[in-house]
Image 1 (cartoon, rainbow, N blue to C red):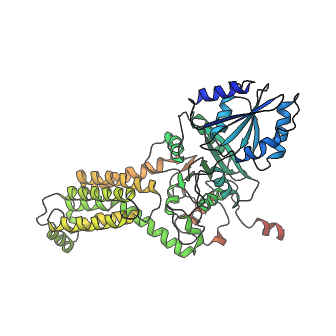
Image 2 (cartoon, rainbow, N blue to C red):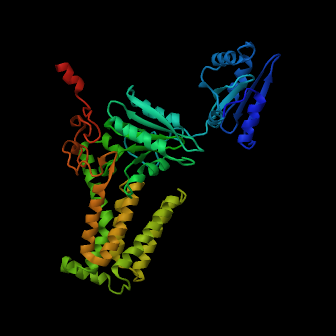
Length: 489
């Protein structure tokens, strides 16, 4: 609906739209032959700039061209604010809710919008979910412009483009797609922007909403989009040919496309020696499989396939299980559930008591359960090893995916032993092989095999030898060496 050309009607309509909310502030300044009004929401705005400069701006106005004269006066009085004009109530209220002040005059169907945002966010602080020993310590915040700036200050390239989309019928959340124009294929950008524009939902409160809505086509517990609060991680992904999605009021940005090997990497991998990083990545892969299959493999061997276990070890395990009233599967399920409860309690407990309380709880429960003959000591070791192996991953989504597939492996081993275990493993590999994101297979660069991209997957070569970007992300693969080659020619 277009704005009225009367200040009183504009104020009345805005109040009616917002139910006469208590944070709406309006004021009319009357001169000899004209009136100027302004309106803002004091919950998100500061009227200091208006109070200081508006009275100076309206002293000498041209009555015949009142709106144009006022716009120029305000523009020349308030230098450090964004200014524009709007013509509809929908746009007017969007800017009011974003911390702008609207200046209105009679006999004009336009309003002048001036940025007067109140600072409602925390400053740039250290990342809490992706802590590292070496590397930048800053992280994204809830301030959208700051997040854009944290990327821009690292990549000073005119080919770094930002494209905005408003998502949410009621929240009208600003979602920015960031990419490097000459690296990312255009069809990927068009697909992402099209997906964002198709989202039909009341509100977007965090980037997690966007991730779930974009991933709706292929259902899988394994994440195909990386969520991070580290600007250096986002920038490194942009330089490799990936797309970054920033969501207003969210400190976590989304990186896509993601493949499975991305989740065994850490932002710190590029700040240490390649040999050490390669060793760490191998450890993470081993931990991935241990966390996934250890309980199921124990159940299969102890319940159905004793002949695979060496005799001496089998005698030791049988001795430990002497007097335990439950089958191996029930033991494992009982303690897996117990450790998951402790994990959830650790996440949601206050920081001053959470970790210590849960470590003590796990020790007491395990010792008491063994002493009471409810479970065998080997089950405590198996479940504890599984839980420890999860801790090497910083991404919560990959941990949750491993947890859900671990349960599938346990159930398959419980009913069919080693045969069920192998069937579950085949289904697991087949499921991962069927996944893709923006046309990129999830098991790339291992399946399909991409020799050139293996240099920065499991084994990391030195930085000077990483001259090319991954070929599965972009055709513009040259990362370094261009200038030297040109100069030699």
